[in-house]
Image 1 (cartoon, rainbow, N blue to C red):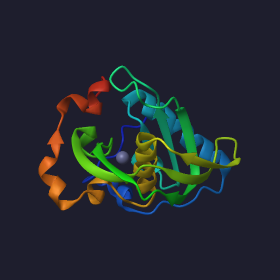
Image 2: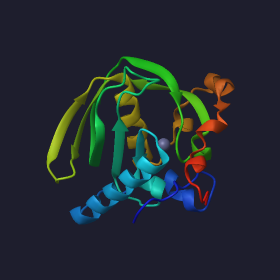
Image 3: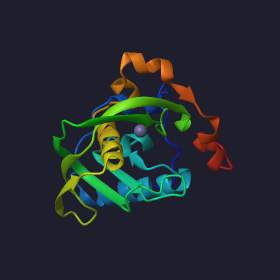
Image 4: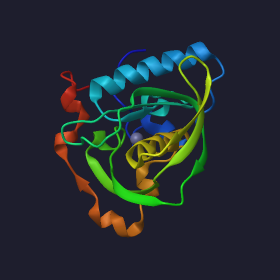
Length: 184
Ligand SMILES: [Zn+2]
């Protein structure tokens, strides 16, 4: 498995986006999925990617978060894999911000979503070690909740409030196919 153009909502290949994924039992398989997610995320860009987005119904997601020129306030997390994650707690405090998704019109569609500011998560890391992590940064928390939703067949669109649908917008510059010279 290498780089895979993320499956899209509304296509036959994207059906897994609406299904519950199953836990990883074979850790070698988990590692291979992480590798493919990592390559795909690095290729297409973005801050997170979940296994169902590359056509694999397993409970695995990755994030890649670092400060950028446009967003210098982002935490320096870098690349991190979450295998069989479980959200243990989420904060009462919430914030609302725009999200997009590599599986929703190739990341071009942006909509406002409310998410918890912080959370606690338990997962297996890339070495198969169980970790418990408290995520305090609202952006990091948002990414983790978005990716974890993918494992439960839920898209950010389904988290939106009705009143925010009027603020949905397109940004064609974000189309991930532009990063793929073959544009499959
Ligand atoms: Zn997504």
